[in-house]
Amino acid sequence: MLLRINHPEIPLKRYTTLLPSQLMDNLHSLAEQFQGLRFVHANSTATGGGVAEILQSLVPFMNTLGLPTERIVVSPEDPQFFQVTKRIHNLLQGSSGSLSRDELEVYFQCMERVAEDIKGRGLEASVWFFHDPQLLPLAMLLPKKKDELRFWVCHIDLTAPNAETLDVLTPLTSYYDGLAFSMNEFVPDGVLGHYPVYITPPSIDPLTDKNTAMSRNEALEIVAAMGVDPDRPLVAQVSRFDYWKDPWGVIDAYRQAKESVPELQLALLGLSQAADDPEALGVLHSVTDYADGDPDVHAYFYPEGLPASIDRIVNAFQTASLVVLQKSTREGFGLTVTEAMWKGQPVIGGNVGGIRMQIEDGSSGFLVNNVSECGERIVQLIQDEDLRLKMGKAARERVRQKFLLPRLALDYLNAVRLTLPRSTPDSPFSVNGKGNPFDSLEQLYPNGTVSSGKW
Ligand code: UDP
Image 1 (spheres, rainbow, N blue to C red):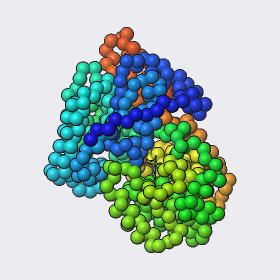
Image 2 (image 1 turned 60 degrees about the vertical axis):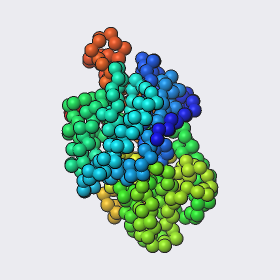
Image 3 (image 1 turned 90 degrees about the vertical axis):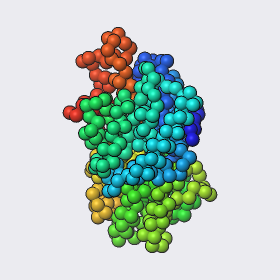
């Protein structure tokens, strides 16, 4: 039920050359202040999806900075747990309906067992980060120790949540010392003013196999081995098969674009990895039916017999495509957008949630509101190589400035610093009253939430 994951050390110096100056210095000085603290990040799946992706880089990064950090994966054995938490995820992103008494019982009973397990193993930390709604009840269920800080980090799109579900879950946030959301727009009114709220948009690790530069030739070889014709134009969406990622809309946009670019091919890459996503297979079946046997629509789900690692395959599709799509209708952040932008690709993204935070419409990519806009932008970008190159360059620079891993590590550490008791003036953690708690990057939103930058 509880899995502890060990990660290797990583070469910190290699980040320095990629980042805006000062960031690594700020990180090192905060890390020095935090000597003696122990951190734990907990989430519900070891691989698959954005949170696992973030933690598998963040945890070794923190350890290499000299801050002992452990990752635990909480994965209740009851198969109903992930059915229920997927429902919670969908409701919080705006589905209609409500949680039944039975569903709530499964949710709380599973979390009670997890809390017992954590207590039984004597797991301790100075700072806990519990990620996403799956683990939200844990702060209520684990007795709070002296000098311990607990954060809840919510990665999902709460722009228009199902009000009834939000009302049921919001009281659980009151057991935390601080909350973190990916965007100011996601912060529910009900949590404001009670405890510190931080805006900590996700980030990608530029040094992984997924994100280091791959030559176009190698990328084309890999996509060819996956059945794509390397000599014809390709557009791709790399995403779990999920209702909110709108794979049907992607197919419609591709069909519209194909009228102008008859050679066009589409890849939908959703290699199954996330144990907490029980709906993916159903969405895959619906999408393949919808593609109606079109030999130029390639949908990938099963992870067996692949020509390279999943990370290299994702990299290859993001590199080999002329345009990358992320036509979501809700999106907590969308690491796939960041990953493609980092590769210098123009991304066409749904004009929602975290995608709006990343793409500046018309300069570092395009935001679209419907299928027809998406289809038009595909054609425009395929036909205009100069525009593709210009946008791709702006996209990469935007990620370099805002969305690389060390910035997220700094955000989390600053959240810790600002949440630690500030009453003693000589405490190493006290925030200089007038000073800038985010080391010159601070933004205080009018609602009182704190962020490290303007997004
Ligand atoms: N991903 C992957 N293989 C796939 C499809 C997606 O490794 O076939 C990864 C993708 O590269 C990204 C993560 O899964 O790192 C998805 O994160 P995102 O924030 O885009 O969406 P989420 O799945 O968390 O909703």
